[in-house]
Amino acid sequence: MTMQGKIFFGLLSVLILGCKGNDKPNEEKQDLRHSYVEQYRPQFHFTPEEKWMNDPNGLVYHEGIYHLFYQYYPEDIVWGPMHWGHATSKDLVHWEHQPIALYPDEHGLIFSGSAVVDKNNTSGFAKNGETPLVAVFTYHSMEGEKAGRMDFQTQGIAYSLDNGETWTKYDGNPVIGNSGIKDFRDPKVFWDEGSQKWVLVLVAGDNAKFYGSDNLKYWNLLSEFGREQGAHGGVWECPDLFPLQVDGSDETKWVLIISMNPGASNGGSGTQYFVGNFDGKTFISEQMEPKWLDFGTDNYAGVTYNNTPNGERIFIGWMSNWDYARDTPTQKWRSAMTVPRKLALKKREGDYLLANYPIPEVDGLATSILMEGFTVGAHQTESRRIEGLNQSSLLLTSGSKDFSITLKNKLGETVAMSMDSKKNQFALDRRNSGQVDFQEAFGNKIHIAPTHLLEGDSVEVKILVDQSSIEIFVNGGLLTMTEQLFPNAPFDTLIIENKDQKTEIEVSNVKKMESVWQ
Image (cartoon, rainbow, N blue to C red; front, side, top):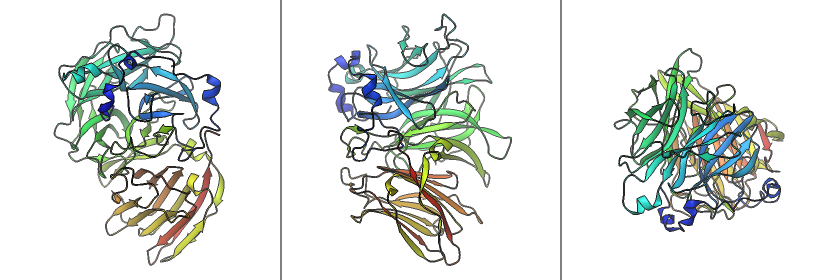
């Protein structure tokens, strides 16, 4: 859980004890058709009905239900004393809001963490044959921090015997104490088949620590990672460790995701990853320099689902950046999640790259064609007016590696993307995209990403545009950029300029994305 907004630690201490009077009647919670049409409200991304949201937490699948918990402050649209908000889905794109799952208590606020399905009841929480869901999270003591102590973050657990509808905190909390580490948080837990035990990874300052347990209650320190590897421009946060089979081979590697703030590739918050091996105790990677999961500035604190039906590694990130998260121009709610993305590990010229690409259910929302396919010839420019462009999916393929794609509205506001073969980079410019001056860091520079293209590669670009965001996926997500946008009028014009002298660009389609709230 990111340590921003500390000024809110002075809020009424009664919030620590957690009043449960904020829940609304179920009928009101499900009637979203009118409340989800205000300016900038995303139509196919998850947002809370109201108030502040940040990190996704406790991503777990069980008995037909995907659970999305998240950092939530139910009193304001700025960061405050953290709870776990809760939503559920059967397909990862249509969501139902649920009552708040976890409230602050005498141990502190409820910061980020994870959830697992305890299939064998190793915890002993089930007494009548139920299957427990167990949440593992960070406690943050406001009093401890204000007193200048270093041990104000510990790890606690809670369990549910009704598939996440209600939660009971373990009376033995905290289950992992703190010997004096200031930033000691964000536990991600999984069952390791090789060692036949639970493994927990959390962050401690700017490195990761691994713990093992037989029952989710008693934990032993196994190892550490990262003091001399990767990026260290800020505090490490929200780790995740999992195996992935390398595409097109029988090889399996382990991937460690680490969010970091500040110090990302284009400023502020970002997510790096490491590829290596894990033996049930120690993670080892030869990688010294950081690799970035997303080169946009608005994909942070993302983690993956436990217990997915087909073993797929599905990722959701928080679509914001701590440089300006508290200042974005929304009124009723603040922050959205990325679309769910499937992670894949690919090997390119001996190097391992982590790709992330929208799950097929996202494509299933694109039900009507706004514009049929067309060709942009060599060294030509094509401009098309498209109503509904602000809620659409665009797919193009190209032999050209030198082109630009621009979204424009009637006010002349633009978001411009370009690929440059000589510089081997993709660039996104949102400096003239609408409201950009609410915080200096939002619109102060062009964002750059490496293309990872090889000789002979063609280019596929998938772009998802929602009311206040754009997500770009190049060549199956080998390059990804996620950015918030706040135009003063809907983007309704698509301009594609082909700067190549020989090859064409094929625009396969532009499709309208359905609203998941209507």
